[in-house]
Length: 132
Length: 316
View (cartoon, one colour):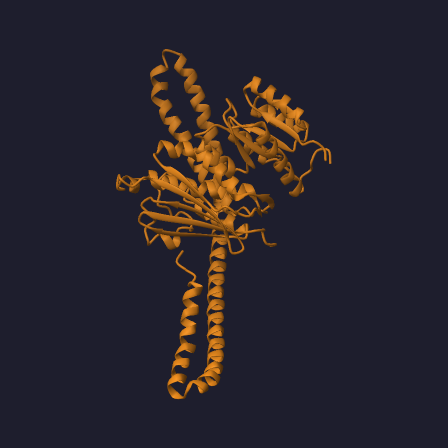
């Protein structure tokens, strides 16, 4: 099976670059952008299986980006990245169709497992999956 | 909820009372030999009659429960359709109000930079912020109303209920700690994995945990005995044909007059402005879509919400 295609969205550039590098080393085809707007542009350009979305971002925040992505045709699955103490936004994200969460700080293996689970869901849902 | 299964043991004891009485009468009427033959026959036929009665009772109860659920589902579906229509119509003007208010706020922020306009801008800005906040709240409600009518097509994936519960607790534990609420896990050792829609189940578990926390933070909880430690208990155990997840809290409880309607839309024990009043309605709908049942029991000092889920989502 082809590697899942993943879009990471986080305004912290250093963290983003590190995550892209580490996920690529673990069999995930990863790309990073630093804002919600850039994420929407990237999705116009390429099909992704999973989007990893930071909940707290300046400008278009994680929830707004989540809503915009989930309103698209055959949207990718979304995993939210959040800190502790974001219960309200956390619940909101789930009700708007987020697949899962990771709480910072997280182990890379945990995120990787969730990525593969999210991709499996997309396959089961009959969504177009990159490379298959 | 209002309906309770009679305990199986209770019915059986009741059923057996009949053959045992006959046995006693047989012993009085003729000797031990007669008892061993006629008594045994009577015992068998009475036991079989009792069993038939028990079966009949159970079937009746199951049918009544199914009818009540069907009625509730139909009623809710009709209500959900109307609500969704209204929510959809209201959403567009709300969106316009929000955009205009945000534009106004931006202009006022710019005006603050000009000395001449500063006092007026300072006076108007809090009002505009309030408009934005209230419109956002209205949108939360319309979103919840739309969720009510949304048909989910559950996607089954293998899930460990304990892991899902743990993850949702992690999302909540900071707020719980700040409110002085302890979360205690009571997980059975052997909890089977289930094939269910994991994001939908997460949504339900988080919603029930959040309700429990809010019940312990609310006004009613302020009147609780200070010596009682505020506690949420999360119990997970294998059930007859699946898994049972229970969220317990030792808050003030749900008033008895509200309990039978607690899953109805806009029935809430929360203060005005807290929540949409639709959380439990949505949860119940989701649990049904997962092939399970959500129920509530409450008395002062102990409330339990139980999610009973099958091992697999049954086909529609």
